[in-house]
Length: 331
Ligand SMILES: Cc1cc2nc3c(=O)[nH]c(=O)nc-3n(C[C@H](O)[C@H](O)[C@H](O)COP(=O)(O)OP(=O)(O)OC[C@H]3O[C@@H](n4cnc5c(N)ncnc54)[C@H](O)[C@@H]3O)c2cc1C
Figure 1 (cartoon, rainbow, N blue to C red):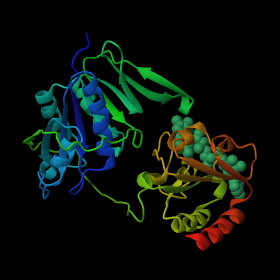
Figure 2: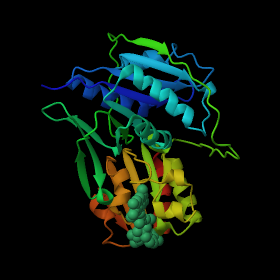
Figure 3: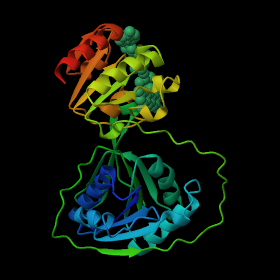
């Protein structure tokens, strides 16, 4: 007989709305709960000025939460995750979950291992599928060998902490008939163990890479930052976002936040331009679910052409301006 599996989803809310990634996490948790007669609880960490009852809690309940716990970030120091671990631990005590979900973003990747250590739980990171076997045991799928293979993990511990890749799970439709409980969790102020010396926030301009319908990514083949200026023109005329291969980021041509791939972001736009990118499995792990990949590359044998729907063999510095000129006529 399968056991009941309760889930706890931990989300870090900026502003007054949850993000699609929060709802993707909810969707994974709900799928597990629905198969095992379990419940979904959410811990929402929110900005002090936000009223949780206005948008956040109702939206989470419509998307499958049976219980919403919330805590104000007023007493949580962003750079000192000790206080975050403590508040998540309090939620764990209340919910006694078998699975604890985080999004695999900077927040989740930082906090999840600490929570796993504190809870003596296994951790599975960068998960891209969640299911249960016929005995109700949770199974977690993630890629390995640089995106060339997949592994399915059955955790041996009673509790498992899971980080979920973005853009892999579909958020659930709202169910207006759902009801849920909402309660606040107190936050104990801990004496900080680290001191913040400097903080630099990257300015977000234009469409967010993870949510863009069109992504124009450049790799080593664009030759340097100037090459990205040409790609910017293409992205702008299609209202798209710019992305990059790891090499382009590591060389300092563009910020690391633009990196698409296994150790970067996952995107699934309608249209993905891979310009001067060879198509290593590590890169494709982040863009393989795009509806259409268009590759521009001087090497006709580049692996990217196997993943692309359309490919153009040639020098990007001639092809991209020609594409921009054509798109400008029609959009
Ligand atoms: C653990 C691990 C994780 C990784 N994670 C990532 C990741 O998240 N994302 C990622 O991208 N990589 C990742 N990598 C690196 C990855 O394996 C590749 O090295 C990288 O993707 C290659 O980048 P690139 O395609 O820009 O460069 P290259 O492989 O050097 O390809 C450059 C391409 O540009 C073409 N080119 C050259 N000149 C022109 C021109 N004028 N016009 C058009 N085309 C031209 C060339 O023919 C070539 O195909 C990871 C590697 C490891 C080991």
